Length: 95
Length: 495
Image 1 (cartoon, rainbow over the protein chains, first blue to last red):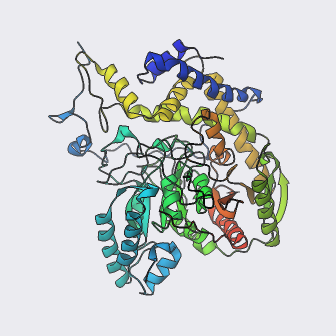
Image 2: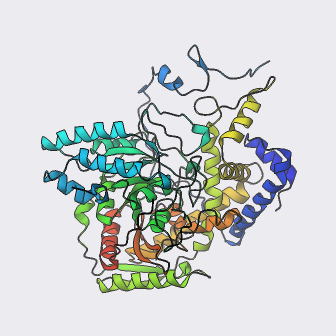
Image 3: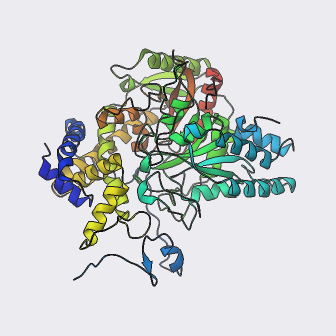
């Protein structure tokens, strides 16, 4: 399977990474090199094999459904690029 | 006492307990060594005030006879670990200025064990790289050189700063993390010891996530005994990481007897790669001979799906990375791009991530996005997870047949030159992890032990892979190998 420039542009869009048009040919070419390498997996007979979900045989633990943290607004906002009046500030989302 | 920075953890601990030195002296010795080693670019955020404060507290505890396992021992912390109030940016521009309001469980465990943090260590951006050339802080330089050749060599990656700092005696030991070989490959390239424990031994809480089903923290140290001491201090069951193992952590150091009589050591034929340098092959055979001489039985084994480990890894790790790194959106922490009039939130995301992530991180996030996208999820991601099941089964089969540990080379070559791989395609760089990545996919413990030097005088390492949760037994086998290999070479100081 080969990735063309428009597919590369679509992937960049999905990943929310701005890629200039003139960088797309090189990007598509790198994708194809990596995907070519990954294609080896098609040689493996995986019929009837379960996809791994957990590398160690363990059940995820449950905990009591109780509040155990919170009231840390200042700390949560401390590293924000733009925080105002106790909120994260972002460009307008809804017109 | 001079050159205290050259001590290992066990030696320094014993001197501290005998009252023959102090943590402040040890710490000052390391801080001087760090300041004189900027050419290595290993320490990227120095924390001398924190170090001296903790050293004084440690000396007080030692005086009171209340010294925990690593009391007063100065170490470096990889930049991937969140450390409260101290820059923690995973060597990425996108986390520039990020000062966590919390401490990772592993680094907190080390604080609780009395260890003294000297500063944060350079690494590949988000731990994605095998040469420490993807860091926003610039390349780390290996203290080792090819004889008199002044060409700068890579310390490996992603824990390159940790490896370089330990090898150059800037600290007694350091933390690393390992997703596909990021502790073991740099350890091998710098002539030190590094162990990645079983998946779940160390809590991942507060460690910047790369690929959550593969990431594990571990120690990088000057010898196997030190690895045992520090690993025990790092491990714990942690309610804040749902994959952390609810198992008692053994006293690993007490398990170092050096007696490996009757142990069965497997030599996997699939690790004998085409084009493997003769020196690596020779070191591997010598390692097997050493273990045999120490009383182990050497058994030829087969791990048939080895060849597919790297391709499976380069589906699974980018897929998980693309999900994990979605959080870097310019809203909650780190870098946000300057926006132009009319830019909305989508432009903010796209520009922020384009400016904040370096090329390798962008590449992996996009590959991950692609393999998870509608129409390709089954063909790539699910197939890779099926292959991962088969890779793990390969190991389960040989362990079920009685194998105690597996011996392999740690890396396919010695350290290469910084910049030498610049023009290679990304896959060439990925091949560095060919011997280590299987261990992450199978969740097993693996340790790299320095075992010799090549004809240019560069260190070479061997890897031992153990049964799940049996780090103690693995460390003991590594201890026997270390004793036989007798690796004592150090880089000549040029920095």
